[in-house]
Amino acid sequence: MEGAIARPLAVAEAAAALGVSPQRVRALIGSGSLRARRVGGRWLVDGDAVERRRLGGRLRARPYSSRNAWGLFAIAGGERPSGIDPAAASRLCSRLAARGLANLAPLLARRARRIALRVHPGELNRLLDDPALVRSGAAAAADLRLGLIAPDAAEGYVAAADFDGLVARHALRPSAEPNVVLRIVDGSWPFSPGARVAPLAVVAVDLLEDDDPRAQAAGRAALR
Image 1 (cartoon, helix red, strand yellow):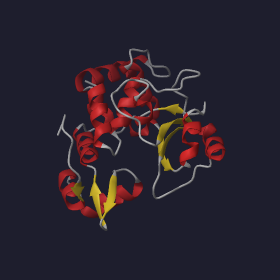
Image 2 (cartoon, helix red, strand yellow):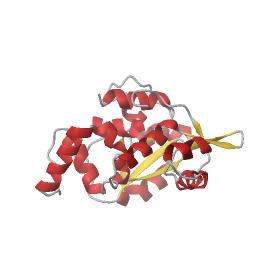
Image 3 (tube, rainbow, N blue to C red):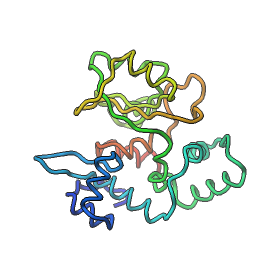
């Protein structure tokens, strides 16, 4: 499926592709580990998400720790990773050179905790301008000229210590129709002081995890 936009899959199809039971697929959907949407009373699983998970299994590697995930992003951006010993950094460099960042994306899930919320549409721009938020994904595509029109939604990273304040300031709330995706960083803050937009490599991987096929295509194009 590499380079193509995969069609949505029924639960049984996703189970067959992953080599697991339909019950396991439903559990992955329920935990947020596998993207899906309910249409007409049944789940349709994101085909690209299935492929990324299948690839992650084929790599036969555990997901990277948060520190190593951010170290890999630093290397992809031509920077020296901090907080990682030279041997680990060398292994990350080798893996990146051999596989490429797009193929390693399934191993980067531990970089942050993902939570979907909703904000009043009139508050959306104020949320995007909040200094505690580093914009990413589709919300950063225009900043990086990725040829993707940002939707009426917000996406970005926030430090764990700033999360409650951000939620309170903008009256964010759980919803069946979220328009905000926050990725909460529990460890060391990986962005430069005052950064408002995530680096290209981070934005591209976040786009790969988007539900919108256009966003996924923009993420793949950015990593070529």
